[in-house]
Length: 90
Image (cartoon, rainbow, N blue to C red):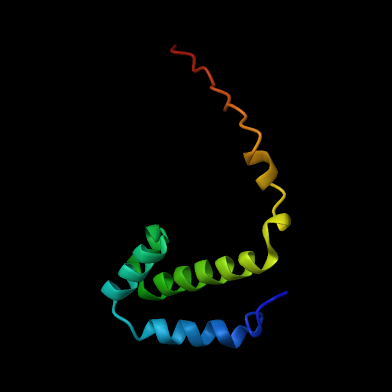
């Protein structure tokens, strides 16, 4: 049940070209609004655009697959306490 066209690479390349026309300040604002952590990708414009396109692509493809696709989601509902590792002070 994929959305039409999202598996076509030209869709993502067109998005990449449109984003390259924006300023760095605008790209950072888009990333902030969409909740994308840029990290070291913020040092270069093409890296920023790549991170934004990748995040959008994964978000859309994940939404199309549905929650049953991710087997790790079942572990989140178990409420398992994390193991605390003891560090030897010496």
